[in-house]
Length: 125
Image (cartoon, rainbow, N blue to C red; front, side, top):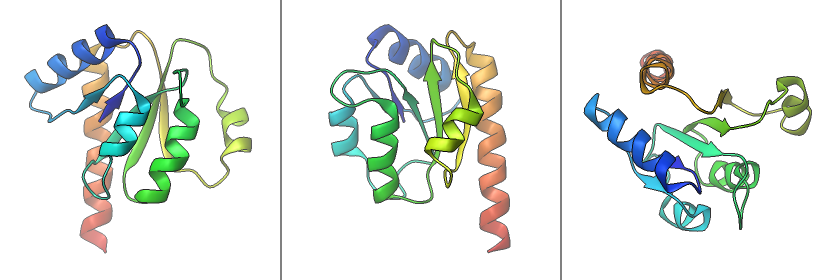
């Protein structure tokens, strides 16, 4: 899942990742994304931080209430300081922050790393 209020971002990421074999649901409205978010439906959700109606951090909190297994990444056009984020979300399982723009190949590499880690966790349980 990718959620970003910029349609050109979601369109390009969706097309690029689907060409590489990923299944992607893209949303430009965080409220609609939240309404369609179901437990265990998504392996990874990539959320833009700054969006109208519901910012990425609040969307993360709401999604986390519904599913503790989904991995999360944040998209941002701004610099983010991980130490500040950790103060706000001390118990989070967010893997990374992605600074826009990011290439599809970089994004795919990161997603594959996260998916590989998830498979290791599932196999050991």
